Length: 102
Image (tube, rainbow, N blue to C red; front, side, top):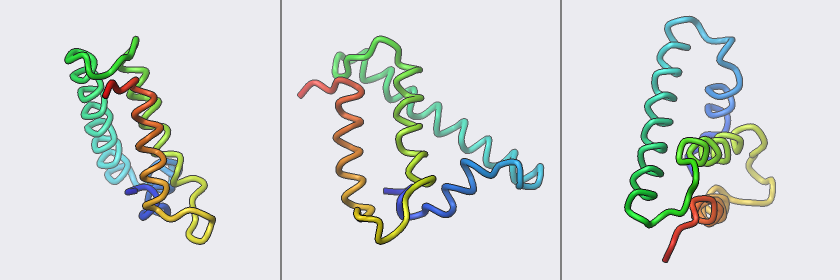
């Protein structure tokens, strides 16, 4: 939902880092690292609790992050899906990627 609603910002942050000044690039990279760690920790905790079925939590977290980040590359309003529709669909994909057990 975040990447669809903020698709222009997402595109810049994720694909145009080279165009940012050094201080802004460092700020964005630090935020990205923090988000990456949060997602990886979430996947690890879910796997440890037996809720997720993943063989490699770090690689799974990378796949989940890529799935969301890439929305900023291709999404545009009026393209066939609302941000909310994308969020619902991608949430289902994420559940399957982590092998969520109901």
